[in-house]
Amino acid sequence: MKLFDVYPLYNITPVKAQDVFVTDEKGQEYLDLYGGHGVISIGHTHAKYVEKITDQLQKIGFYSNAVQNPLQVELAEKLGKLSGCEDYQLFLCNSGAEANENALKLASFETGNAKVIAFENAFHGRTSAAVAVTDNEKINAPLNSQHSVCFLALNDSEALENELAKNDVCAVIIETIQGVGGLDQGTTEFFKEVEKLCKKYKVVLILDEVQSGYGRSGKFFAFQHHQIEPDIITVAKGMGNGFPIGGILVHPDIEAKYGMLGTTFGGNHLACAAAISVLEVIENEKLIDNVNEVSAYFFEKAKSLPQVKKIKGRGLMLGLEFDFEVAELRKKLIYDKHIFTGGSNNKNLIRILPPLTVKKEHIDRFFGSLIDMLRK
Ligand SMILES: Cc1ncc(COP(=O)(O)O)c(C=O)c1O
Image 1 (tube, rainbow, N blue to C red):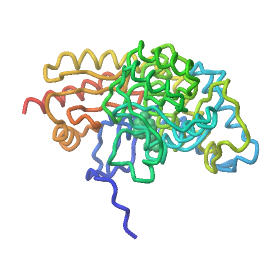
Image 2 (cartoon, protein in one colour):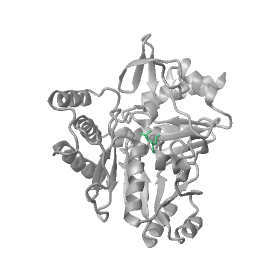
Image 3 (cartoon, rainbow, N blue to C red):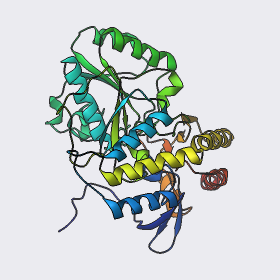
Image 4 (cartoon, rainbow, N blue to C red):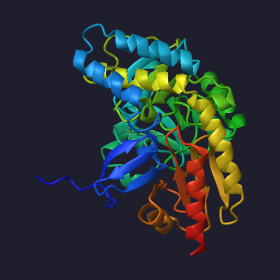
């Protein structure tokens, strides 16, 4: 059987990885400043993480959500404590799209409405409602277009209020920092206005922290830079450091009812072990402090490069914008300098999403290579 060919692939075959490095089958090592789409949070194959998952697998890897699973409770308590969202309730699933799908469904149950407000250039995933609120026609099939969605410009509170005043909206969904879109973000003033308007019109505010969450922005959640309180927070990516797990954090005002959400695999024993280990490492190794330190260093370095037109993002969710398309530059960084970076909808932007363990010396290597490439 052949693979269903939906991905344009780089000709690289990673066979092992350690911390911020990935090694291919020929023994070539690559500096990973992309973490496989912002997934690797505590570093590849972290010893404590490997030990925790291995131990768990030897006890029990999976049972369904029909029985007690104390690991889910432990994960919820730890996540509440570390994120400062202790009052929220946790529902576990397996990916970012699924987290957003469940968040939107819950918002619709809660309000009795179906229309969703999303933002231009947003990316929320590939499942039906998640892709419908993603601003990219090319990845929406006719089936997905049946959802009722309105896309607004970021930072336009007036347009938001006009739309909310129609009283047919169930949710406003927004990435705190746009990932795939190219690192744009709303202002604090705008986020506060969104919160206020959602309360006024009794609409569920969903913060998509799938990419920006888990410390990547320099706070546990990126929305915490804006001092707002979302109704639902969606998480995935860094949550499992590569083990597939996602979740939604649900405000205490939203009441759970049996059967309204459900999943076979979500919150299984192995996934919980992985997610608990990630939180333990983030806490014990003070990785959020490291994010802030290395991020400040990155900004300093980037500012000294005249070719960089704009530095976007926060923490270790960063973008360097040039006045030319960067596809060739990124290819050279991979094949000549052995450094992984990411692209985005903005063709002039290099996206940087390293493991949160990255050090200043790795940033030095990146900028050294970049300067060398730009000189050629
Ligand atoms: C902000 C955001 N939301 C949702 C998703 C979808 O996550 P997944 O690919 O795990 O379904 C992504 C993936 O890139 C994302 O960046």
